[in-house]
Image 1 (cartoon, rainbow over the protein chains, first blue to last red):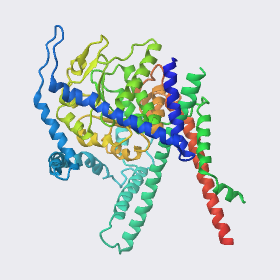
Image 2: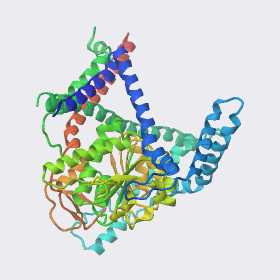
Image 3: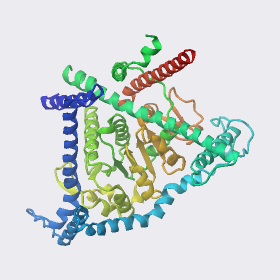
Image 4: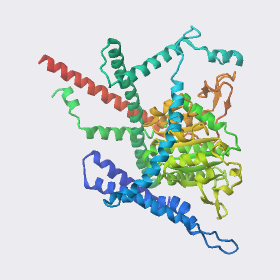
Length: 244
Length: 319
């Protein structure tokens, strides 16, 4: 491994230690690394937006190119310059006198966005609404679906389509959970009936169960970040780069 | 001071230190942890493995180093699967300007691995194209649906011969006129960019997802609603993919005795996907033991914390 790569890794280790030092207490080293990180991220974003998007999609098309030896040039489409003032109008939101101008590009964007919402709603939620309609009456009263590994494809297809008791119970729990959780969000009127109060309370408990499961997955993600950083310091840097 | 009081007064900094020590120690033992991949991850693996070789893939890589622990392993596994199948793909990002560069870094690592193993590296234009960063996920999704060629514009890549050429000059993209001409769109993300894809491109092209543990649970309804053909969540998802690459997948009705550790798919009765040759177990396998150790530490702390609390309450009642 060459010296430059080692230096790069060492900088990464210093930054990692610096950022984790906040776990001990707030300190200047942490603040320094945090500001370096934010500065780099902001700088890189500006560069990436220009180099990967604006230059290729806008500037190069607008200015065209001169032909090199043996190849013809491309003409510039100067009408693209009109996009600049339209974009800049958005920044007029900071001017008290001219902030009305910012409403024009924002209004156009909102108009497009609103027009897309019906399609978006059905694309996103339609299949889930459909999937929520689950059969709760079993078509086969055996508790579990049998092992299909030794069945003919025809027999397996019949078994696959049957609703077994365990599946029906599962679907019933699912349906009850949906109804109970929805009833928890009835804020507009007073829930006086005993049935609705029970559903409301069940919804709250079931929501907690769901949030607990989400928390478990979130913790796994956070641990993965720590593990990766430790792998970087102790394996990628110390073991493979420094003491290889 | 009683044990309960001592436990309840442990400084949080001590817990952070314990977590760092435990995760670090368990990075070194080479222990293969038994695994049963999730059906969602199996579905994703099978879907990717069954894409016709002549149909290119769209890969929307929206992860950065902020989720490297999970997303990097997912992206590495995906790249290994695609490169070993010789699958062509179009790589682009909408989630973060840093995303294209981290994806390029991973491709460079996998390419070095391939060269060291005596294989051909995956090269821009010949094997894949790199569209780079396209800002505004909603706008890009809508533009892709309307006209994918215009959405990606005249982006160019430098080929192996050093010539800069437009991505649409590649022969394997000649037939790709709309998003429906692609075999699949796979999103690797730590944010809600997949929501935008489902909203804009749902039903146009099969969608696959490799996401972090944070957003994983809210993605399960999309998989259940068949809006996603498959789903790999977090570090467990990485290990699932590596496990299937290492051991292969077969259908529940192939009438063969499953090999040791071979994965059996309930949703695909008669498939047989053999194990992939080469390096399969990597980041997921290396991190999985540490993850278990960290989770064990957390569970112990939660139990101790609750016992301490109960003990203190009981003592308070007696007093």
